[in-house]
Length: 203
Image (tube, rainbow, N blue to C red):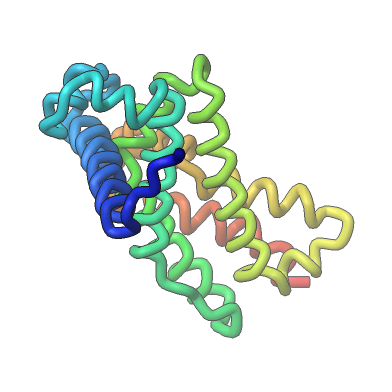
C-alpha cells in the first residue's frame, strides 16, 4: 500500500528545496560578482552553506546551474527595466534607450564576463546569451518600429546593426577594450545608435 504524505509536509519540503536552490544560485552569482569568474562546486557550496552533495542533488551539473543563474539574471534585468514610450521624438528615444542599456549592461557585467569565458564549451551559456539577444531585438523592434519600417529592404540589416551595438560584446569592447568609463561608453553607444537611425529618419 502506497504511503500518502500530508500536503503540508510535501509543501514544506518543496519550499525548503526552493530555498536551497535559490541560495545556491545566489552564492554562484555573488562569487562571480566578487571576481571569481569560474567558481567551483566546492566554493559555491561553501558560500551557500550547504554540502557539495546537496549542491549536486539540486543541480545535476554546472549546465543546469548556469540555466538557473541565467534565469535569475534575466529576472533582475526585468525588475530594473523601465518601458520607454515609442511616441517620444527619436532623439529622446535613442537617449533613453542607451541610458537604460548602459544601466542594464552594468548590472549583468560580472555574469556576462564569466559567461564569455565558458560559453565556447557550454551549450547552456550560449542559450542564455540568445535569450538576451531576443529580448533586445524585441525592444528595438518596438521602440524604433517607425524608423525600421522606413528602411524598407534594409530593415533587417538596420535591425541587426542596432542589436549588435546594444549587446554585451560591444559594451565590453568599450569598457574593457578601450578602457572607457560608463558615461563615455554610453556616449559612444548613443552616437552609434543615433547615426544608424539618422539616415532613415531623414528620409
